[in-house]
Image (cartoon, rainbow, N blue to C red; front, side, top):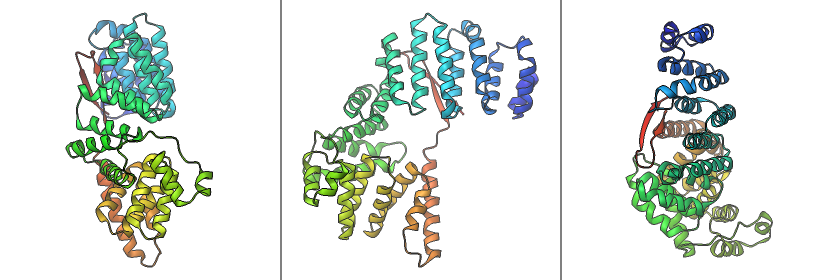
Length: 391
């Protein structure tokens, strides 16, 4: 086992795996912490996730009983969640369920339910994730007092379109954890809940204080300023979205009236108005409309490309760069090439130079958000200890 451990640390992963498979069950070191983590790392790197999970269940009681201050099964599963592809996370969930059935301790069960929620959240199964966060809080009400629980649940409600519920949780979060990063997330939920003026005030105060510059918040502030000025709206109770049939049969004035009276964030309506403005060479205002459309429904790439083109045609370089940065982070660097391809191909060398410059800039910008670590938390709402693990 010592040799397997050494080989794994020297990145001879397959050789280490062979030794682990041949000798682990017979070894006196089977339950030792350094073997535990070395074995898991080996299996994860080789994508042998079922082997790793089986081992965790096998040693759970033995290791955890000897280390009351740290649940190694929980730690191991957290490591695996941070590494495995989305398609295999259901296997991790099944292992958590097996561990839940093996314990009668409600606090331990609550921890497992919470982490099932984390796992499902990472697999884009947001509604199921919410159910497990709530199960965790029912078994251990202390979760409701923990800032990270509020933040994660607020984010999930945001993802499923429950913006009022999301904003209420973010408001509670910022009472205890009043960071600029949490404040702008609160503002984001307020935007889609129709609280435009309040959201803008928060963004103006806290966006400049962010640790990492994020052009998305600058763009959202610009959009809010435009909405408030254009429609004289501080807040709005949104009344659904205009269907495509309505847009096809309506005049520009009728669609503007819909935006003002019912839903200024209607993505199809804003896209329609943006297109009409661009046809009249009113590129700056068109850009704002395309941006609102893009932020209101993030499933579509086309509004971003139109927003880029409008800012470019309006010679608004600063706005153009904010759009390029934000859209490339959301859609990948390829969106720059798609934008460049919309130009008439009269001077390929200058266009290629422009594209390469933008791509290099955006790669550097996106890299500022890279974080190859995750946080393993211990304690409760009164003791917020944690361990940062680099992956």
